[in-house]
Amino acid sequence: MPGCHGGGGCNCKNDEEVNDIPDDRIICKSEDDDANIVVHVVFECPVKITSLLIIGGDDGHSPNKVRLLANHPNPDFATITECGWETQSLDLVEDFCGSIEYPVKVAKFANVSSLSMHFPSNNRPDDDEDISTILHWIGIKGVASGTKRSAVVSVYESQANVKDHEVKDDALGGMNLGVS
Image (cartoon, rainbow, N blue to C red; front, side):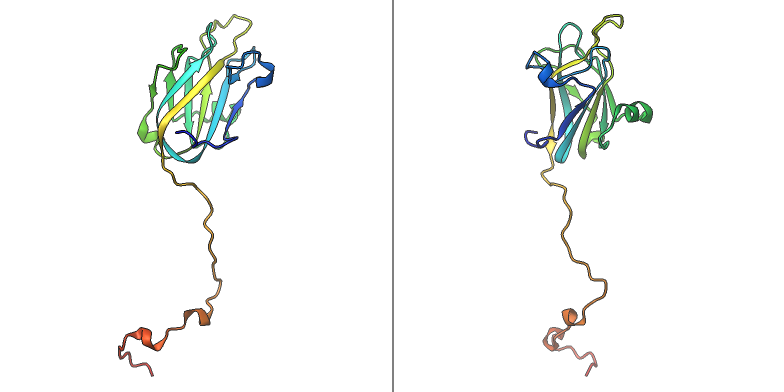
């Protein structure tokens, strides 16, 4: 779905500033003492998502689970942990080249305007000093509807203007309606 998520349509919560990370391949890295990351993608038009591909960090820094929330307006950690309603949850394995495709329930992701991905944990041992989660790449496969959502421009009359609704005599088509 190239181009379906516009500029600024993707953000990450609980991540370090990308400029502070020396490895330019990393797109998102959680703080050292927390494995949680939320990635929120807003699409320009509704999409039908069929599968995900995720490339995580090496040495156990790749995520081992993702909770997907469809059409949730810009969630934060409190909302995600308290709401308890994910659209689907996937168990992940370490994939360093993006060859593993995770299919999603297409019926639940048929008309998606935004997708939130919560990565709650990774493959690092809990007693390690650096339990951060690293994401190198997220691929979203699917089909865009092509229709962009926008406001309808229209004019509404609070009271009808009689001059706008006059019926001409020739519009009656020669019917004798008994009107003189």
